[in-house]
Length: 317
Image (cartoon, rainbow, N blue to C red):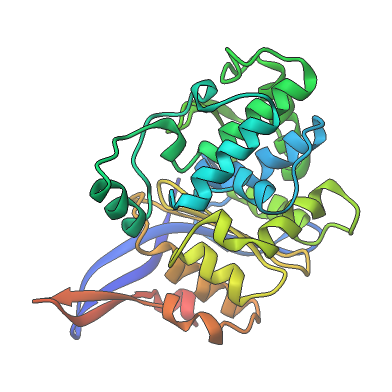
């Protein structure tokens, strides 16, 4: 990818570092209206694909709604209600945590991880941020009579259906298949396709499966992320907006107008993602006054704020 400077790291009045990246916004027709870098190049959306994977599961007949559908779209923090929700999805399909094939991990959220360690608990698949998605994948397999032993194989009917759904809502073919951090297949599309897909979900008519995913994320943003997570704060503050973070500096947002936004920070850092997404939303005319805390990230010196990570001047203008 050919990236441009999208965020600047200021220590006092000294520009210490920059983050390069690619950003795209699309209108309700899926046509790009803002392009920084080369958003037509492909990337792995990583966990930003999860709402699209959840849509594929609904299209395949799984019966999830509300907070559990939001959890299927989540990179959750591993708080108690997240873990209990994943186990509820499994139990609804007659399964337990031994069926999960996601990577054993500790909770993702800082507070949840601290509580986990204080309890003397160890890493396990149910605590991993992807356990809700994996539980829903397994429930989809049970609903269809598909094998649950090889559900992570790219040729498994579940993953074939997922690929077809992503291609449908992104409006382009999958360019590459890899293995995500949780072990599930990850399907590469362009950032333009990712933005287009999120816009379509956010603006989907009531009664559609796309709307069902968006409505669950809107209503239960704490289940998509967790306490203090920027993706949760963003959806809490902006009615009708869906947002999903992804590893390696990816972020995607869908607006109820049908507009979509996707970005990737080139170095894979997460610290500039929210800063950039807020700047882009502001450029699109979205009232971001309730998420001003996400518009910059503090730079610390001796334990106090001495600077900030800010959107680049070109992006902020």
